[in-house]
Image 1: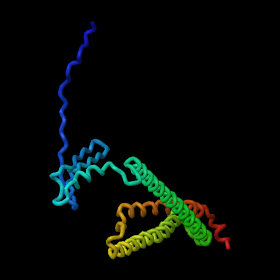
Image 2: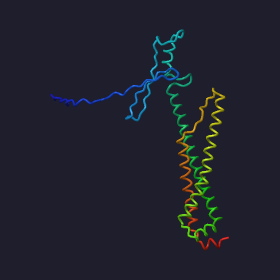
Image 3: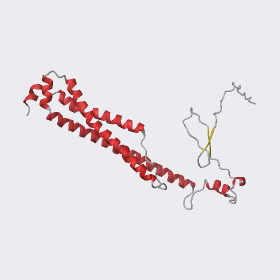
Image 4: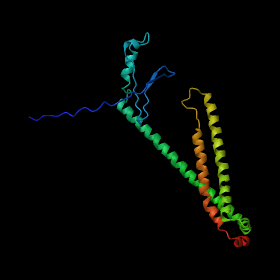
Length: 229
C-alpha cells in the first residue's frame, strides 16, 4: 500500500477584483466593463435577456427569438460559414492596407529621387556661384547646409501644401455627406498625429534626398567652377 502525501497549503494569495463600470449606450444597451490593464486582451460577453418577462407588449417571443438567432446563420450560410466569410473580408482589408503602405512607400521614394535630381540640376546651374562662395571663404559645411536648406524648403512647401489640400478636400466631402444622412459612409477625418507624422517623414525624406547634391556641391573646386560655362 502506497501512502500519498498531500503538499501543505501555502499562504493565501491576495486578489483584488477589478471595479466594474456601467454605462448606457444611446441605443439603450447596458454596457458593463471591468478594465484590467495588466492583461493585453479584450474579452467581450454579450448577454441577452431572453425570458418572457423581457418581451415588448404585443410582441411575445421576440426576446427568445433574438437570443436563439445569435448563433444561427442565414438561409444560405450557417454561423461557422459566416465567421469564415468575415475572416476572409478582414484578410482582404489587411491586404488593401498593406498595398496602400507599399504604394505610399514607393511614392515617397520616387519623390525623394525627384527632389535629389532637381537639386543636382540646381547645383550644376549654380556652379560658378558656389565656386565664388568657396573662393571667398565659404566652408564645405556651409555649402552643404545651403543645399540641404533648399531641399527642405522645396519639400516642405510641396508637402505642407498637399496636407492642406487634403484637409480641405476631406472637409468638402464631410459637408457633402451631411446632405445624405442615410449614406453608408462615415464622415472622413484626419488625425492630428497622422498629419504631424507625415510632416516629420517629409522633413526626414527631404534631408536624405539632399545629401548627394550637397556633397557634390561641397566638392566643387573654386578654380574649376570659375572656368565652367
